[in-house]
Length: 640
Image (cartoon, rainbow, N blue to C red; front, side, top):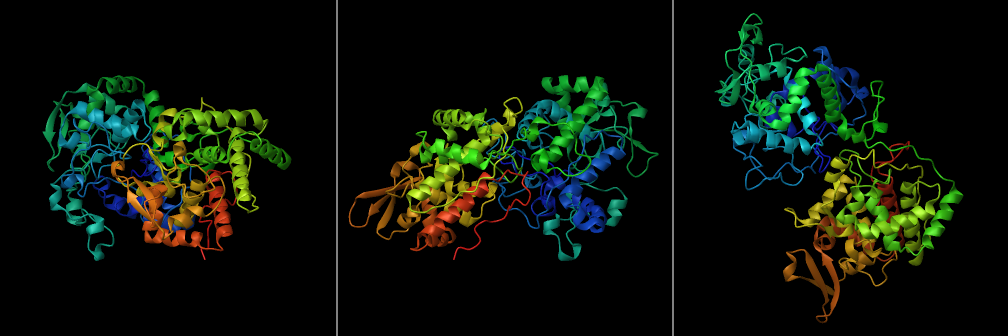
């Protein structure tokens, strides 16, 4: 079972919440017949109940299966939490049909890069098409696709080869009959099938007439035993292009020796030819892949270690930092993709208070301090639990050079904080400085508030920062800062919702944060868009009051590609405000407008300030997995 694929651009996918149980993944063509595998696990889940999640059970069962065949396992960490409905915030692609219904391949000569956050080469695949791009059995083009999709999962070429070879050392492909002979996927099945789909005819199953991918046969002559047979056979024989009984393109060895034939899955006394997919042939034909494959062929220990580590990474990368792992089988070794951060210590209250005073007297503005703290903490993603303020990765590459962070301005703030922080970690200093700025902004607006700061963050090092995978985390848009790097295929307000979802924010939390960050001057490039206040730098509800003002009407700026708007006074053509789609959605969308109205009402000025502080603290602490009793639910409980 393969629930472990996590996509680097968004951190979504993977095993973290047991999503394979729900649509669309439970009916994904590449997950064919895994409905039966999940049912085989049900007695175990039923027996142990709340003591193991489905998400953990999927990965543990995979590890046990590998061990039972003599394969290497690096370790296991539990701690994944199940959800009980499909997560609706994942973009699977714009296609409306599956790969087995004619969905086109996503990498072509005219489209050399995968779109946005996507990693699968065709809709309904997990990785690449085993027959080749769009069914074209070209090993070199298959290698191109493999590198593209595995790179999106933060896997290098060695890890790609190890996972491919290791995964194909076991089991067989199923393509005994054309797929149209079998039933519909689980989601499309009748109610009496109870969530089962595809092949359910016991007679057909008994005769071995099973089809999933359409590829038929085992890769090795020992398909239930780990060893070096995969690479031995790949390089020992020439292969010819053939067609499976289901009509899929695959490769068969030319004149194989009898001892290199595989046992028939139903009759172990019968021997049948092995096979390779076009993706397997890519390991032999692509020069880079071939060099790695030959090394693994000649060094079994190197393959064992590489596969075990790559499998562990594949199945644990969305579990977040190592502090979240549970169980006795967690490896002692720290791995760079786990984003290790040295332990920090909490300064005294007196030291923290003294630092805040020095920061406010340093000449840095409220907007500079708020913008820096937000830039640091808002990298957090609940999808794979990466990012956040802990570690102060914003001071390291690649984050310090991201366009959204305005590197020159950021460097000025960080240099000042470095000079002032003393023994306080830079990560804590950034959050403390942001808290001081919010407190000052609230005070200037007439509200005496304390912004709670839980200290004890550590500072990461450049040496232990996985730059290649952090690159994928660079925001292409951040509606909280009114930032859009380039025109995207989806509306900018939808990108804001996506960012809020990754931060784990509710609609009210997102709303109050946008309104507060606008008046505090957190916009990228100090843009005036959405700064709907005459007293910038003060924590007021002016954004909502002025957005919902009936005396203002808005017009599109013709040259802005439907992104920028000017607000005019109804009494004339006097320009009052400028705004983006991200701003105006809070007056346009009925649900967001209802929330904005609460914060615009007279008498709710103080409520706005306190709700902003709660939501701000939630983001600042989003990655503090070291805190016991840390709340992850909504912090704004009552809008009334």
